[in-house]
Length: 440
Image 1 (cartoon, rainbow, N blue to C red):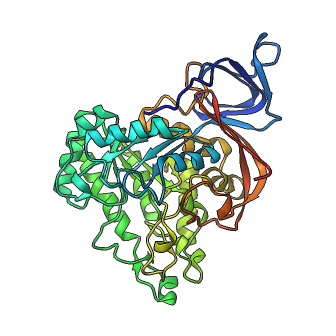
Image 2: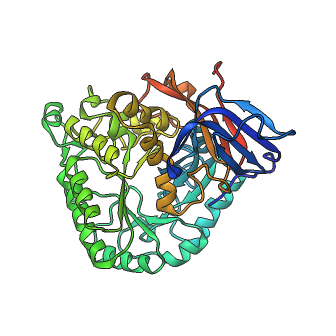
Image 3: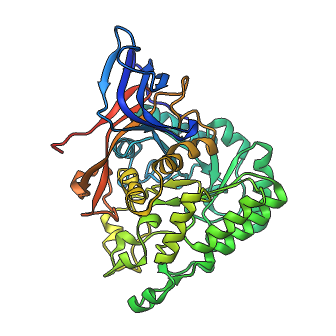
């Protein structure tokens, strides 16, 4: 994983009077965090102004939440090949403003990240331009074509943290079974966009709403069929499997049953599917055209319950920047996707404020669980861990306006919406990469 330079993070610093939340350690209490040279030295109620010693720079957190930096497991960028949509630099600036300290970037670029040299390019480019950590997932099939498997072991050696075809499902069951068996030899995570492509030919959720709007629907069964097929193959191979995004009640039930059987499986959900539903499409609003599509309110509630009970492991932004040329079109012709790095944390907080999800479970799904699944050092406030964390005022509200967003593309489904909860500071390797500016 590519880390930003820590050359500016020298010296001992203490963040005091914070509400420390670290799900990895079961920590949720008032205390402080002591860091030095980019690493955590101590965290907890014993870290006080008196205990830190002379020569320590101290910061009063004023009771705000201090948590491990967020790890976003699903970020699309345009670099290389389509930098007009998003670069690693602009994505990292948006991520930092959203409390994200690690971006996991998808292989859907030009060229595709299906070769060790491209993995190396992403890591070197991130080192030179990004202000947060960047780790790439590599392609599972050559050119994302779904026909020839990539060299998983070589890609892992180059620095890829998982293999996936990003926003494309691997439909060939024989190839996917071979990929799972091969990945198991390297203990490599296989990530799937769960959608049966011959069924997923519409543009929104198949429902009465789609009929009323005159739009072709994508049935929820297109997702659950692929999930169930994949789980059978996991059972046959024993490989680690992650469903990148699930979007319906049936998929939650299937994943819950698979975990009860002890299968090595995990799953994610985008914050969009937790907060929004198909009715938000309204008058053909293309910023709400997503893959998988926004589902019914019943499905949304099932996803929230899945987050609550841990059936759904992680929450992602599914950041997918699109230009105005591809979004400001008739709904059926517009591209799928929405940006979300800068709004991930704030939008997720609505589950705490409105749906009764515990704050510690939210932060677990945004930091500790992704780190655990991917085998990263981050995602915790323990001594010896990287000093990657975020400080947030969970009561401060702000309105999402496109001219305020740092992403190069502006296709946010939360445009003009007021969100409750604001990141005040983001620290990576002990260095502040974002600080809230009330004048902006």
